[in-house]
Length: 191
Image 1 (tube, rainbow, N blue to C red):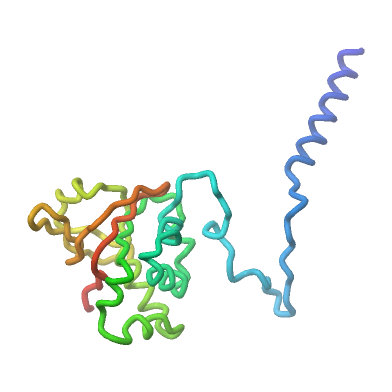
Image 2 (cartoon, rainbow, N blue to C red; image 1 turned 120 degrees about the vertical axis):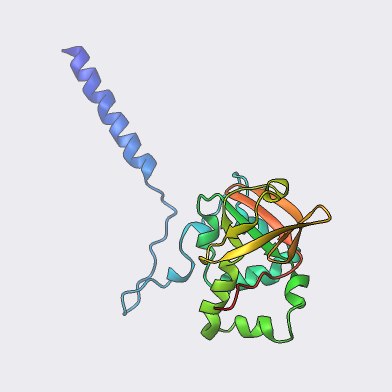
């Protein structure tokens, strides 16, 4: 009888600790507007979860790079943050600010306009490939299938790897893939 009573008491304490342990007293309930949408709905999803312990994902690497502020602005304008933090693996060919600056005057500013969001997203997705391949391993490829359902070429010139005409100048491993820094914007083929 004492054993059954002890098991019930211990089971009750365990259940209470589980319930209390699962609650987060610091959670905010988003304000709901008259239209029924959340006032905080703009910045939701996995990309906006703070995590200082894991290996940085491809988005966090770009966010932390002073050489990729234009790329980050473009990703944000196209609302692609959450796509770059998925489990992957992803290879992101990340053009530097200088690569964007080499485009014709006004190109970046025009692409960042809300009405050009789809065109911008298409260009950015053309810089992403499923996989996690080193620069050396990429030398074995002739083409890569990009996230925008189009292909881009892989070439080796003087031992250097070029993706869609852009040279890989550095590679940074990420928690969900790899970031290959490139010296040019890789434009998708015209349809």
